[in-house]
Length: 107
Image (tube, rainbow, N blue to C red):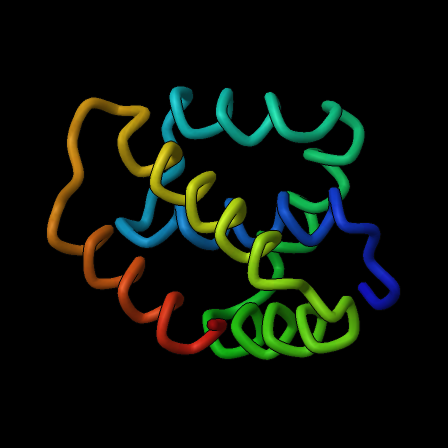
């Protein structure tokens, strides 16, 4: 998908983060749906489901560069990622590692 809206980009990034432990549970889906409408979620999920990890990262980096996210917008995005990780009541090693990786890569 090219020319994502900001909502689509946020949904894709949150789906990528939620998938770090190879499953997306209902708590995580609910967090994502609280940020975007169900139609956007489904559209982005369908695309995300077809992409491999490398494709996902390339799309995220490219889209963030095109959108020119400010530091404040990135801070909000990372707050949303952290909320997503905490939504199931735990913050495991895989989630911590991905959070650090994304923070270093995207900031």
